[in-house]
Length: 239
Image (cartoon, rainbow, N blue to C red):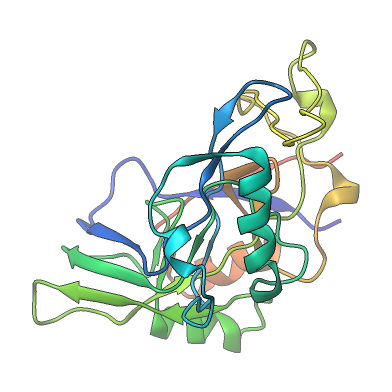
């Protein structure tokens, strides 16, 4: 059975990179749910390849704000044809290339910002050449304050897979039947649900925790072999 690993930027790093940036077209608003009463925006997935320039309603995605449920659904369905099939499109999901400023140094795989994972172009090309599946990098519009800097691409890391119910709280409430909000803390000892895990990609987010990056054994072994390992890598059991 394939092994899976939780990935994150280490707590201590020799790299100093920071961003002041956002996605060009903004994103989906938050929503106010009439069923559960929650006002929330939990989407951390960005779709940097999406271009909203031909959408007459594109201005409605520029300002972060909560909207009533029906208005959120209207805006979500307008962009659905533009994103990869099956994308969850949670409130807060963003679109378009990354725009802004970057300072400092960046590791070959830079996962410090959950909503905008970055990769050096050379690192991405090496991973793809080694057969790592499902990696898509998109050009950014970042401005660097220093003259010498790497070409940074933004990875589109889509949500797949879920936590196994056995590792979630016993008193966990079921997701809201209307808005789908499923609020519980990430477990200290996570377990992945085997039947939910993707077989077509070696890097993904968890569908129920979009802040959590998961890599397959192939991804981790290749990263280590290529010397790209500025990551905290911890195996997660599967059941």
